[in-house]
Length: 380
Image (cartoon, rainbow, N blue to C red; front, top):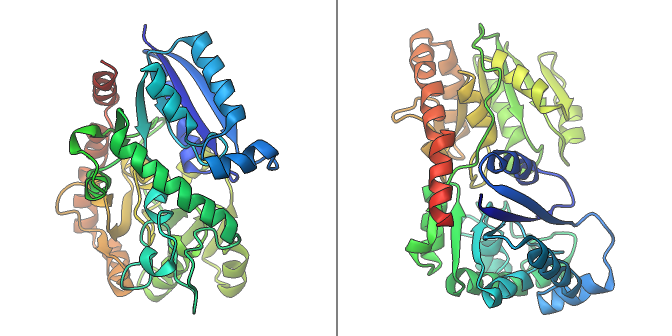
């Protein structure tokens, strides 16, 4: 049985990427011997962390990493997030030891952090579709972290080195959709190094039920996720009598709760995944108006497995997870089109046609044996 060392740096606030790590570990354990090497950004910064920002290599983490490799003797090291406690020194260690490395890239931080000025970061419409950054008035520096210029500068130097590693180190790069692959190629990275392998998702208890007159948004409640646009489009639509459930936490939650006082609108906060799935299973549709490129949209994939329609912006790689000619996607940033798609829920024929192939399409796309096969090919 091949041995895989999985490496991940947990974020300060636990998110979807962190959650997926545990599912992927359980998934790979069935066919490989797994050891998990991780760090967390929750702890207070120490002297090693401060030096690691400058050196882009954490001396303390490197020692632990080398000791783990010597003890476990992995065939492959499978790396996820390295920002910031783990940092980039581990790639040099792998190269020196000639150990095969696979790097899964979940987000576009490398693209957004590599600019020193705000002008270079954003596109012509003054918005970054990868991270949600919007150039503040008269702002010069690219403050990826709005609360910290210094941390943003550290990320700048980290990103420059990270991209060099992607280009020149002997790594297999894994992304979650063809759209992201094309973005990496545009950065000058060899196409042959980049593989599209989906995240495994456990589709449990997916018995179809009669759909209630309800809609669900689940995820971070923030500006870049378009939650307010979901609410206003729903209120202006002909399905405003549906109940809209907003599940999750975020910096806009309290503001939106106070601003929109509607008997059919319910903010449920954070819920266990089992409860979220129950809401999705019973809903007529899930809705998102995210303004960002998404990797593998978990909410939408879970909804499809439960036979629930997804209303989402046709943007980035999202269309890859739906059947061709799918009728419930809307033009990104066109919220009148979003209203039209919400209204389309009242059309019984269109609704039944859309739900017919949803479940089969996503189960074929995320077939576990297919994911195993693609992953094992990269181990050889």
